[in-house]
Image 1 (cartoon, rainbow over the protein chains, first blue to last red):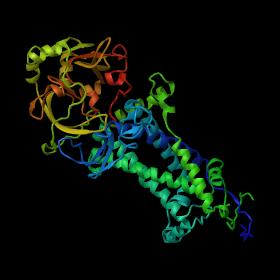
Image 2: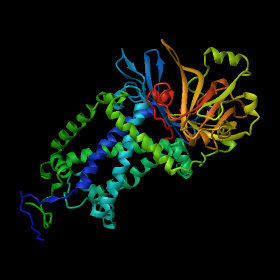
Image 3: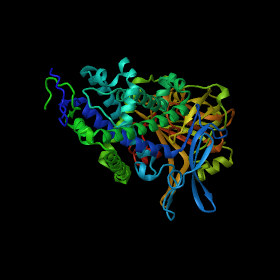
Image 4: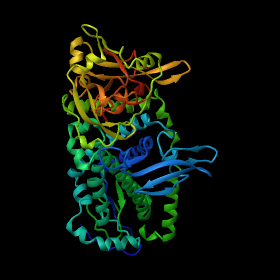
Length: 282
Length: 262
């Protein structure tokens, strides 16, 4: 190993950072999550309300979110109620489309698959990609455990926790390091996604299945009822969308071509000063 | 490299990436809604996988959760048909269902039929269960009826029978070419499940018309559309294709999954 102190303007080594397992599962997930999100919103539109507990209150109120439309003197308006607070969301939630041809769905057709109301098709596509998603996750966990990706890039070490404040400061200044393994915040983000959000969204999805409820009633108790599980499923979806937005912003900030290349070919241009090892390219 | 990321470049890149997301409107995937689309037919196999895996993992006799009486906090929300208008049903309703008979036919040793009084005098089971609509909502209610399994045994199900088809009185859809009547089907595991009952009582009252009077089948480990209301005939078959559009139920013919356990 040669530790070359880089000269100003020199480039870091080209390192093989992402294995074929990481790259393939990444893109399969990207496709899966795209379809799961948009068909999920289709399914949500069939009953655009979320509740806490075992059942949905029709003669009592246990809803924490509802999206609907009502008529006003100025025409139909969309209304979203969150924790008892109502917001006028005309044009986005509840009522969307043009004034001449308004559409009365909770989420607009632009973000659902199909674009029109079709719960049956939404479910077919959702469950297909749910199976793909889970299968990909199993493959990823086994491969990442064996090839060291989990240990190197995902599970934070004590030192990573201590380095978080500094990493936050570096990110705030857009001073991003491109090393051989992931940085502290990166590890924390991916650890949360793989060990918290992915398992949660799969388990809450299964808890909505009456068949699984019979086999594993403890899951109903774990989440506090089928309707709470449905609510948690929705909230985890929002967190994954948030992750996606931050993910894209960070790819752009860190150098989109280099990041894309590493996720397509595996090769990644590290920061100047990164120690080189065998197998690196100049 | 990273040194070239100025604030301006960063903002520009983010704006480009963001506008790409907004352009991803999704009517280009509407072809998946066509029932005969080949991609859709491949995707539908995931539901077959779900059915097989759940049947393998979940014991045939494993019960759906039953709740305590304190969980009944509201009436059972009706959905779908709520007051059928076919002449047969209207007549029965006027007679307070006195002439009603439930028939078991098809691949059985002997066709049998029972009046409502006969069904009510059979061994009864009451269960407080959660009804899950495919739309996403749930409602807990107490259902009382007689288990279907022993009734099938009275008729003597032939070995080649694989499914029960449930024929109903309600015209769920009225078209120019006539009424479309609701029907459903299940495998024999669901039919013989201990909680599968021919219910005639709801929350300690006589089953109301809106909830499927006089008889509604309960299949407690499946979604609401697998629980046909206004049931009059159970037909044992080995093939679902002759009924409706051949998918095993009214909603299945419209693209919903047949198993309905998820």
